[in-house]
Every structure is written in structure tokens, then in C-alpha cells.
Image (tube, rainbow, N blue to C red; front, side, top):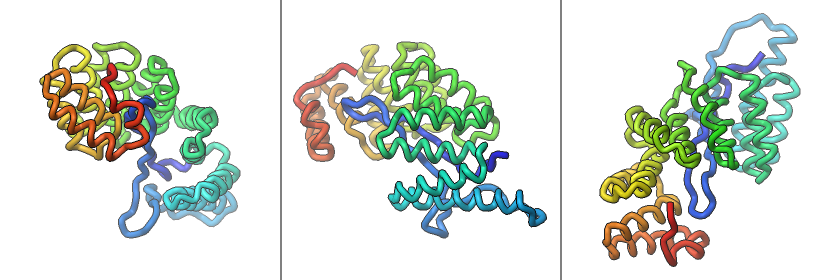
Length: 273
């Protein structure tokens, strides 16, 4: 049986200049400790072999998350495999292994683990969103949309705006402009400060020539979350279109200062979004 809700893991799309989208994992933490919390409520059970094994699997998952937060990827992987050995049907363990594979640059392995988690938890919004995100960021934007739709059917999914924003961004990547606009607007209604949706709306407005609207969304995006290289590059492109060369130069300067490696290839001129 899956250790339901032992791990709360949601992936969102974050744009990086010159590199498409990447994935970021957010795990619910307990402020009273330097690690991750089990969000399942404790249950009193008889002390049987099965209950002890479930408890050991849950503990291994908790240790894996803690080690991952500390940057000890090797130990996190060992604990995740231990959890999977104790509970071979644990979607949470597969999700952790997927995140670990991503950290190690093993995208194919990450995708296989995200897919396995989604298969084991076919109604879990987090697992479905995670696999959709992997698909989108690995060249399968159109295919990813069905997974986001399924994620949004989960009434217990705590962050539907994330899946909705991911869907909109990926619809835009897939060339489905009408769907992108719909999903992004709905994401903003759910979460007015969602950086993925705001950035994608700025990009959409720039593509359609609505430059003042693009500027408004871009400014909201940069105010809502730490800047990324792609967000700064996009802001400079918007200001170029509006004829404000001074503002464009300020964004390029920020890009060079904050992301020097990325800026080498992008700050010298505007690229189409």
C-alpha cells in the first residue's frame, strides 16, 4: 500500500535563458525542525510485522528527504531505495528517486521514475503534475497537457495553480495559444502571484504584439519571485519593443551581473520569445 501523503512534492516550470524549462521540487517542511515533515497523521495500529515494515518505509522516506535537503544526494538515494525495498508500491519513493535522478543529470531515469509514480498513484495530483512537467521540459509539451488535466481532477491536490500554470506554459510551448491563454488566466485567478503563469502571460502578450500588457505581466513576474535569466531577458525584449532602450539596458545589466554564464550568449541582442 502506498504511504499516502508521506511526501508532498510539486514540480513547477521555471524558465532559464537558452535552456527551456527546468523543474523545481517543493516539499512541505516543518519549521520546528531542519528537515521535512511527514504530513500523514499518525495512526495507532497493532505492532505487527506489516505495520513495522510500513513504519520503517515511512522513516526511510523521511530520512531520504532530509538528506536531499542537506545536499547529500548519495545518502538520499540510499534511503529512497531502502523505502522502495520495504514498500515496492510506494509512489513517494519513486518520486524521490526521480528528483534525485534529476539532481544527478539523469533525465531519462527521472522520467521513468516520475512515470512509475504516476502509474502507482493515478489519481494523485502531485504525481500526475510531476510527470507532466517532466514530459513538457523534455520535448513533449503537447503530450504533457493530458497529465496536467488529470492532476486538476484531484480535489485534494493542494496546489492546483501550479498544475494550471504548468499547463498554460506547456500549451504555449506546444503552439496551443487559446488553451495557453485560458489556463494561464485561470492559474492567475487561483494564485495572482504565480511566477510561471505571469512570465508565460508576458511571453504570450509579447508574441501577439500587446507590449504594454507584456510589460505589466513582466513587472509582476519579477516582483513575485526571484529573477531568472530568462525572465530578465524577456523583460529586456519587451522594453526593446516599447522603445525604452534605457530600461532594456538595465535588464541586460542585471542579466550580466546576476547570471554571467548565461548572459554571455544572450545579452548581446534580443531573441524571439
